[in-house]
Image 1 (cartoon, helix red, strand yellow):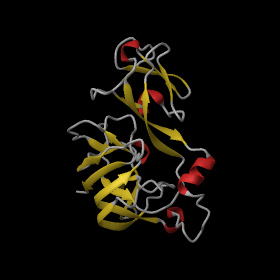
Image 2 (image 1 turned 90 degrees about the horizontal axis):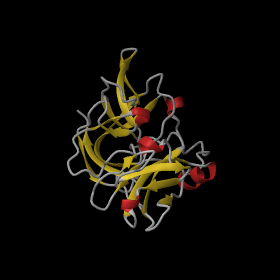
Image 3 (image 1 turned 90 degrees about the vertical axis):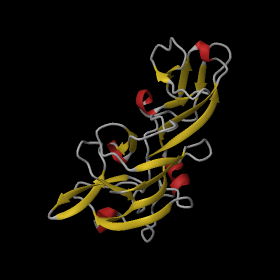
Length: 238
């Protein structure tokens, strides 16, 4: 599942019918509301203009295929200025965030020719500029889970009396107010900024910063770490 239950605190929740186009989705997915057949139904957000934020999915429905990872790494003091991550990032140019010791965010550049520049030179390898040699940086990214990793982290989802697929019930629980710890967030965003006012619904049922989706009335209260890669968000639906 993609909510961390021991820390998540639900202040208000409802059950809602799912939209015919909702498909399957993970717990913790950002959901939006859309009318269909005279009822307000929900589906994962797409980051489109005009979306209405409905809350977070609260129903174990699908074993995740991706998850975020936070690694603290040291850029070598001598050339080559490369670090090898534990996994291969998805969409390195947009979904990888590098936090430098001075609080600055890294800049993705296929020819890193200035300080703070980095590049996914191949697979799980990041290349940095020589001026950043020796620095300790925090890298946040999302990667694809292998079958074995998914089973180890979340179980294999094969127990029919544990799972209640929304594709069968056509409804899902929604957390509409509270404190959630979720890994359904855009890993390339600078969640470490001191004043974030642009949390929004994004593509794939993800939390994003900016974009054209619905702005969420909430605040970040916990940043993902290497030991605990969940984003803590206190929020309320309108």
